[in-house]
Length: 412
Ligand code: HEM
Image 1 (cartoon, rainbow, N blue to C red):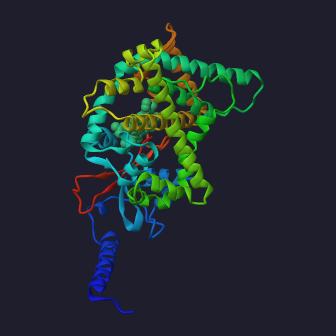
Image 2: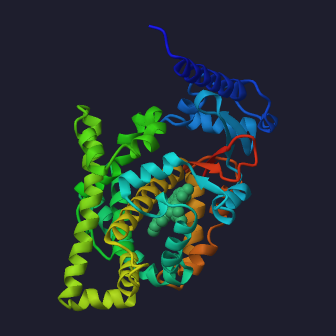
């Protein structure tokens, strides 16, 4: 069967475009070639599989020690990715000039599909507007206000672990305890809701489900670059039907996790609304004081004019985003810190002494004292070691290079 002339032109054009793109990626010189970096171990996936897997520590260490604070690794089909772990550069990329280095379409679509409309799925003006509403609750002043609440919860954790040790338990699942604690911290501090009394060593089903998100999604990593495409395939109900029909247990588990986030946020919102409507004093005064995140959001929803009024959908998106962002990162980072401290008992001892000295004469450390601590943590931050890496991909939206550049930031 011979193709018509227009079809031949389309095929020839597509093949030329693919070949030209591959030539540019693999052979055309780029200013990024001046940066050091390891050779790719796959023509298609570059260094991606070495970077993203649960045993990737050695690879990250090698990148840091052999190639320095800024290097280049290869992504899909030879894409060059700048790999950064220098604290000053990271501050510029993530904080100071964050609107230049924007999240990738994959990052945005993924968070939009899982959590809805929140900070992790918005860019530019929309993101600025959301931050304007949320900034007061991330201020130092607000944190100072929240410190007693955080102490109350961590004391419950302390009692829970002490009781478990007293009962003769030899092995304590610290990640389990810390996941539950982080959930309770964001629950009370963020959503004005208690998820876990921390009064028994039994796992919390909600924490277990939410915590399974990253490991469940992980193996789909090679397919993730198609998420932005999938996100545009018709309306949400149709996409859901397609996902529901996939006979893979991991996909089914992903749906359950996604639905759990959704139903948890909805339950909290509905119950707060109902309490507010019936004049429940606790909730009314809580909303009035605006201590937790959802209260701030509900206040802005109530005060908004018809045009800028935040919809329930947006509110739910923020709640889901905060729930995920706060508890997954905090529990993982704390567990990792404890793990490293258990391996380096001398550092553990120095840190303990530092805390005892700082606490002498006062029951709790104030937030200011906490922030001025710790010599040890400061020293650690100056050392080139990936202890708590959080690998984050961003793109340079200014397109100052011939291609949009990708940046992988390692937070440690
Ligand atoms: C050790 C703990 C934590 C680590 C390592 C961490 C790390 C990060 C990183 C790397 C980002 C940037 C993601 C991006 O590119 O947009 C981020 C964003 C965010 N995190 Fe955390 N985080 C931690 C704790 C928390 C907590 C406790 C909360 C909430 C109470 C939180 C809420 C958020 C939110 C809302 C964003 C999105 C900010 C925005 O886009 O404006 N995180 N976090």
